[in-house]
Length: 542
Image (cartoon, rainbow, N blue to C red):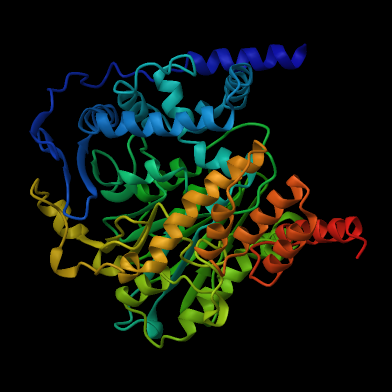
């Protein structure tokens, strides 16, 4: 009863925590539609470039920025919210369970507002004025948008989802062609194909702090990948988290604060230290002034900084490397059993093959689909750097204020180039990118192997649904599952599960044994297959 009273009190306070915007001008004009791909509001604008990426330029105070962003991106915002929230119906189809989930999220997020700077709550409040209609049963628009900024954190904390298995690296000094810092990263956050379709490259000119750019989506003011006018870059890689008891500062909001208010590594560390997070995360910080990169490793109960010694390169996957986590049991287990260490070694292998890193070489590394020693491990394998599910990939040259952002599909499309000095000196509605520096498409997207992989993705999704619902699957589909992505262990594993459930034990055993010959993603996956094989041999008296 006491817990319920405390929870109710906390929820009530969060419901009433609406930012005071009385000191701000709440009157902004209607946006002007120039075309289906360009909207203007005073000096602010939204336009789509030739790669299909939306370019957003916004300036002003916190409330003004929120209102303008909401107005310019309304359709993108509403679509993104619909796509994201529709996942609730997919994961939790029961209306009763959805009601319980809403109550849980209200309780879990009850004190998030205490851990978000007033500036960002004000910006989110302005943005929420343009939120979708029809979702007030989940939460009112302001709280709903506030909570969605913690979706990345909640997803990997509660389910350890594969959608946050990111890879990043940095090189500088003798390791790059001109001695300046280069950073590359894949943001492997996957919330469905529809979620990744409409990406926004936001260029923000705030009244306080530093100008910055970030790769984002409708309804998101937080940062997952970005660079500011002083050449500070931030990217995030999820670590191993235990299930948190309460939401605190979303990692994307912490990143946003670093980007807007830090100009050196020391300032970035100071900002990170003063915030309480509720999941484990590595934040790779690049700095033009410091001419190097480090990682800040944050978790609810620990804090570490990792800096390489006697090296001109830094590699980051999904495990911690600082002394602060040397004896952390969850981190050690994650390193031993997940695909994080494998990807780390693959980045190390590819970087060591190149005497000097260039932006093009950094892109090639991010697009690499093979395993260690160039082994074919199947397309979509999480041990690969390019898992063919990335929301985006990005490359920075902080000292030159240059950034390259990938376009669809995944990181296979052209990388649009931007010079922050030019963008903020003279933002133009005709397009912000530097077309002379564009990095070309990956020809892999035009290959038969790519088309087969896309077919495999669709088939495997349908097949998993059939297994779950105990439905009959035509033998031709079963054959296609295995032939469209022949080096990937998962297809044989799914076929084994189907045959096992149907009682075709000999066929199931053959499928699981075939899966064992491939590069299986994690130790738990390996154990599950071994368990199936043991059971089947007993049943078949082998």
